[in-house]
Image (cartoon, helix red, strand yellow):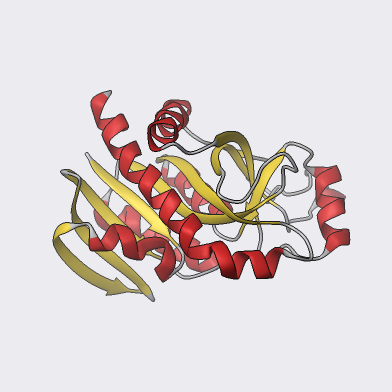
Length: 233
């Protein structure tokens, strides 16, 4: 089986790309695809670019060109759960948008018209990700991942979103689009994100300081996840 691994930024994919063997690099639609072997597994690693549209383009191309059996989103996020700290890991149970509002038409906040209100991750993949996190020594929490095209530093907006999504564990800028594309293509997915910051006024300074460390933490768990998933197939 071929695995599709998606990261938005160079910092989120470079460590995995450097560990791949027999790699063929393809560029299309502004995305970079690394097709090769990682830990003995067939992997296509893709750098999509930041934001929902770039993530949707990249995920669509990834599925259309390579037909992965599983899609994994790696990278960093801002923590929403006040009990979590920088470096902790979030494994998605569900994904939703934090910037979609069609409630006037009877949809729930975060729901794209005609689409589900949340996109559930594959439960087996969540279990494998938890096992991989434990093996890697990461402190992992399961829960809702929020996506939107904004960096979460505005205190009032954060407070409003905590009311709308009290169960949210983190917020980032690509997972919702990745999940929606996987839903449309009936492809199993899971989001594995390490916290580079806690949302709020100090988020930017923390993000800049801990980006590389958090990205490496997420990448390490992804590698362990590949082994854990393959062992159960």
